[in-house]
Image (cartoon, rainbow, N blue to C red; front, side, top):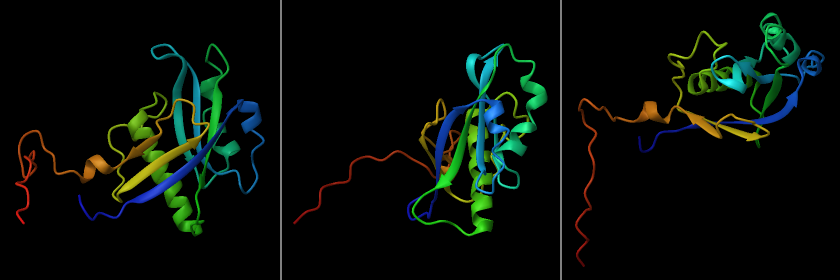
Length: 170
Protein backbone atom coordinates (compact mmCIF):
# COMPACT_ATOMS: atom_id res chain seq x y z
CA UNK A 1 0.00 0.00 0.00
CA UNK A 2 3.01 2.29 0.35
CA UNK A 3 3.18 4.92 -2.36
CA UNK A 4 -0.54 4.71 -3.24
CA UNK A 5 -2.09 8.02 -4.29
CA UNK A 6 -5.31 8.65 -2.39
CA UNK A 7 -8.11 11.04 -3.33
CA UNK A 8 -9.49 12.96 -0.36
CA UNK A 9 -13.11 14.10 -0.63
CA UNK A 10 -14.26 16.55 2.03
CA UNK A 11 -17.95 16.98 2.76
CA UNK A 12 -19.23 19.84 4.92
CA UNK A 13 -22.49 18.77 6.58
CA UNK A 14 -25.28 21.02 7.83
CA UNK A 15 -28.57 20.31 9.54
CA UNK A 16 -30.86 19.19 10.84
CA UNK A 17 -33.45 20.27 8.30
CA UNK A 18 -37.07 19.24 7.94
CA UNK A 19 -38.29 17.67 4.71
CA UNK A 20 -40.26 20.88 4.11
CA UNK A 21 -37.08 22.97 4.38
CA UNK A 22 -35.24 20.68 1.96
CA UNK A 23 -38.16 20.80 -0.51
CA UNK A 24 -37.27 24.42 -1.41
CA UNK A 25 -33.50 23.86 -1.85
CA UNK A 26 -33.63 23.93 -5.62
CA UNK A 27 -30.87 26.44 -6.48
CA UNK A 28 -27.83 25.64 -8.65
CA UNK A 29 -25.63 25.34 -5.53
CA UNK A 30 -28.02 22.91 -3.81
CA UNK A 31 -26.15 19.71 -4.66
CA UNK A 32 -24.15 17.20 -2.64
CA UNK A 33 -25.12 14.28 -0.39
CA UNK A 34 -28.42 13.80 1.46
CA UNK A 35 -28.67 11.83 4.75
CA UNK A 36 -32.12 11.19 6.23
CA UNK A 37 -32.60 10.16 9.86
CA UNK A 38 -35.79 9.02 11.57
CA UNK A 39 -37.53 6.31 13.55
CA UNK A 40 -37.01 2.74 12.36
CA UNK A 41 -38.79 -0.31 13.85
CA UNK A 42 -35.50 -2.20 14.34
CA UNK A 43 -32.86 0.54 14.69
CA UNK A 44 -34.99 2.84 16.88
CA UNK A 45 -35.29 6.61 17.07
CA UNK A 46 -32.98 8.93 15.13
CA UNK A 47 -31.58 6.11 13.01
CA UNK A 48 -29.85 6.74 9.70
CA UNK A 49 -32.44 5.67 7.12
CA UNK A 50 -31.14 6.80 3.74
CA UNK A 51 -28.12 8.32 1.99
CA UNK A 52 -28.00 9.50 -1.61
CA UNK A 53 -25.90 11.69 -3.85
CA UNK A 54 -27.50 14.74 -5.42
CA UNK A 55 -25.16 15.64 -8.28
CA UNK A 56 -27.58 15.50 -11.22
CA UNK A 57 -30.53 16.70 -9.16
CA UNK A 58 -30.87 19.32 -6.46
CA UNK A 59 -31.39 18.46 -2.79
CA UNK A 60 -35.11 19.15 -3.24
CA UNK A 61 -35.41 16.80 -6.22
CA UNK A 62 -33.38 14.04 -4.57
CA UNK A 63 -35.22 14.20 -1.24
CA UNK A 64 -38.58 14.02 -3.03
CA UNK A 65 -37.71 10.45 -4.09
CA UNK A 66 -38.25 9.25 -0.51
CA UNK A 67 -41.29 11.41 0.26
CA UNK A 68 -43.66 8.41 -0.12
CA UNK A 69 -41.63 6.48 2.48
CA UNK A 70 -41.38 9.14 5.17
CA UNK A 71 -45.14 9.62 5.45
CA UNK A 72 -45.28 6.18 7.12
CA UNK A 73 -42.78 7.08 9.84
CA UNK A 74 -44.12 7.53 13.37
CA UNK A 75 -42.29 10.87 13.66
CA UNK A 76 -40.96 13.45 11.23
CA UNK A 77 -37.56 12.66 9.74
CA UNK A 78 -34.59 15.01 9.92
CA UNK A 79 -32.28 15.68 7.02
CA UNK A 80 -28.58 16.52 6.93
CA UNK A 81 -27.08 17.93 3.76
CA UNK A 82 -23.45 17.57 2.72
CA UNK A 83 -21.69 19.78 0.20
CA UNK A 84 -18.24 19.17 -1.27
CA UNK A 85 -15.61 21.53 0.02
CA UNK A 86 -11.89 22.06 0.26
CA UNK A 87 -9.16 24.34 -0.97
CA UNK A 88 -9.42 23.69 -4.71
CA UNK A 89 -12.76 23.43 -6.51
CA UNK A 90 -12.82 20.48 -8.93
CA UNK A 91 -14.02 20.70 -12.53
CA UNK A 92 -17.70 19.81 -13.04
CA UNK A 93 -17.12 16.20 -14.14
CA UNK A 94 -14.79 15.53 -11.19
CA UNK A 95 -17.18 17.29 -8.77
CA UNK A 96 -20.05 15.08 -9.98
CA UNK A 97 -17.93 11.93 -9.73
CA UNK A 98 -16.76 12.84 -6.21
CA UNK A 99 -20.35 13.24 -5.00
CA UNK A 100 -21.27 9.85 -6.44
CA UNK A 101 -18.15 8.17 -5.02
CA UNK A 102 -18.67 9.70 -1.57
CA UNK A 103 -22.33 8.62 -1.53
CA UNK A 104 -21.39 5.04 -2.50
CA UNK A 105 -18.81 4.82 0.30
CA UNK A 106 -21.18 6.35 2.86
CA UNK A 107 -23.94 3.89 1.90
CA UNK A 108 -21.57 0.93 2.04
CA UNK A 109 -20.11 1.74 5.46
CA UNK A 110 -23.37 2.87 7.11
CA UNK A 111 -25.80 0.41 5.39
CA UNK A 112 -28.97 2.51 5.84
CA UNK A 113 -32.12 0.36 5.61
CA UNK A 114 -33.78 2.42 2.85
CA UNK A 115 -30.75 1.94 0.57
CA UNK A 116 -31.32 -1.34 -1.26
CA UNK A 117 -28.27 -0.99 -3.51
CA UNK A 118 -24.68 -0.38 -2.55
CA UNK A 119 -24.68 -2.07 0.84
CA UNK A 120 -22.95 -5.22 -0.44
CA UNK A 121 -20.01 -3.44 -2.12
CA UNK A 122 -19.15 0.18 -2.80
CA UNK A 123 -17.68 -0.36 -6.32
CA UNK A 124 -15.22 2.52 -5.83
CA UNK A 125 -11.98 1.63 -7.60
CA UNK A 126 -10.03 4.83 -6.96
CA UNK A 127 -8.27 4.87 -3.55
CA UNK A 128 -10.47 7.34 -1.67
CA UNK A 129 -10.93 8.83 1.79
CA UNK A 130 -14.16 10.73 2.56
CA UNK A 131 -13.87 13.20 5.44
CA UNK A 132 -17.17 14.30 6.97
CA UNK A 133 -16.89 17.70 8.66
CA UNK A 134 -19.39 20.08 10.21
CA UNK A 135 -22.76 18.91 11.54
CA UNK A 136 -22.50 15.30 10.38
CA UNK A 137 -24.79 14.00 13.14
CA UNK A 138 -24.29 10.19 13.38
CA UNK A 139 -22.19 9.78 10.25
CA UNK A 140 -18.69 8.45 10.72
CA UNK A 141 -15.96 11.05 10.66
CA UNK A 142 -14.13 9.17 7.91
CA UNK A 143 -14.85 6.34 5.46
CA UNK A 144 -12.42 5.05 2.89
CA UNK A 145 -11.33 2.38 0.45
CA UNK A 146 -8.09 1.82 2.36
CA UNK A 147 -9.12 -1.69 3.43
CA UNK A 148 -9.35 -2.55 -0.27
CA UNK A 149 -5.72 -1.48 -0.70
CA UNK A 150 -4.48 -3.92 1.94
CA UNK A 151 -2.99 -7.29 0.99
CA UNK A 152 -4.34 -8.80 4.23
CA UNK A 153 -6.14 -12.11 3.68
CA UNK A 154 -7.22 -14.21 6.69
CA UNK A 155 -6.76 -17.34 4.56
CA UNK A 156 -3.11 -16.60 3.81
CA UNK A 157 -1.21 -14.70 1.19
CA UNK A 158 1.74 -12.34 1.09
CA UNK A 159 0.66 -10.27 4.12
CA UNK A 160 2.50 -11.01 7.37
CA UNK A 161 3.23 -9.49 10.75
CA UNK A 162 6.61 -7.89 11.33
CA UNK A 163 9.18 -8.38 14.05
CA UNK A 164 11.56 -5.57 14.96
CA UNK A 165 14.47 -5.17 12.59
CA UNK A 166 17.95 -5.58 14.04
CA UNK A 167 19.44 -2.17 14.96
CA UNK A 168 21.78 -0.63 12.43
CA UNK A 169 25.43 -1.14 13.29
CA UNK A 170 27.75 1.84 13.07
